[in-house]
Length: 85
Image (cartoon, rainbow, N blue to C red; front, side, top):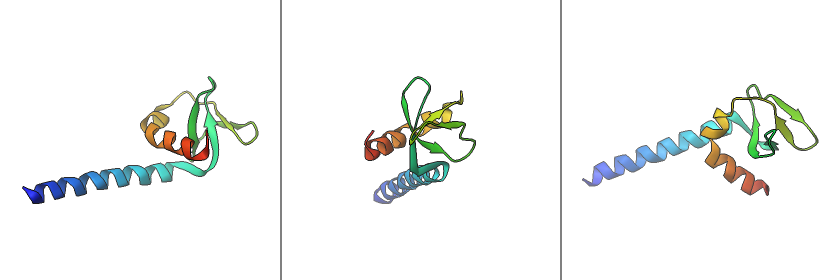
């Protein structure tokens, strides 16, 4: 029973680590923040196919596909909180 819990915890920790690592690979975490056309803060800029317009230290996302920002919403919110937005 104890080894099952340990394996489960290691598996969960591995999934969380992969989620955070993929966030770091897909987004520019040291870059400027991004907001949508509606004015909602999204998080950091995407590295691949960003579809962004620079309006001076802030980017506006011009794309229509928000799936990546929805998938990483918890980490984007943490990033925005750390950056002071």
